[in-house]
Image 1 (tube, rainbow, N blue to C red):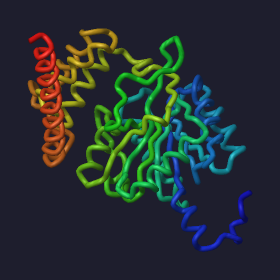
Image 2 (cartoon, rainbow, N blue to C red):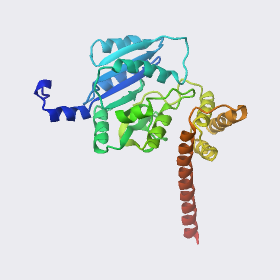
Image 3 (tube, one colour):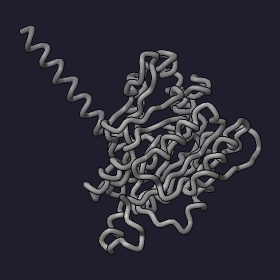
Length: 317
């Protein structure tokens, strides 16, 4: 049973404060999935102190659904952003920045994002908070994304403990403020940018395999895959991605539909800004740090390949 606030000792209050978090969500035409997200958050064993949901100019029933929950649950705040019709890859973060204004007056130690097309298990955020409490150097964390392949939900092939997606993540407040919040980027990639900046500033970043994020709309659904692949290539360029690493990454993404051609178009998108002389979206310090990380990963991959070849040769010798 919960103690009334005035019965808590100073030690209890400090402990509660360590678990205080807030969430933000930017939703654009999510009537098909957002109720799953809403039910998921209100069912959490540890609820957020406040959850700001921003409708990014939605034209379906998204606003109606969210308002109905905001009227019933005091910790939910709703904001509608009206603008010129259309949707861009940076509009999500612009919407989150506007929604952050509704967090004023709330005490919290963690701030996070949850997308409007997913659900998580009831203990998701409680266990995520436990990870932070066990490791003071952990600055940004999330779970693994699961998608329905027609035979049930399974772990997305791109999941990695070193890659923390934006879908349902928490950021330690000190880390978030050091980053200056989520960056508004022309081609998207705010999750990649945030975790790279966090590492630059000495924070640890980790995805937790045991925490599942159930994504109810397949990655890339609702957008043209080839156009998206070209956009992702331009995003990689804008971050200063190493060309050798980019080629290897695209080769490893042959499993993404449409097979092969999407990887080739992503490489074309990466090359195009070189041709037109487009400026990068990141400072030189970021580019240097990112390329150092990528070259280290390439060296690790090459070393692993050499080990496998040597092992195979030893078996046939």
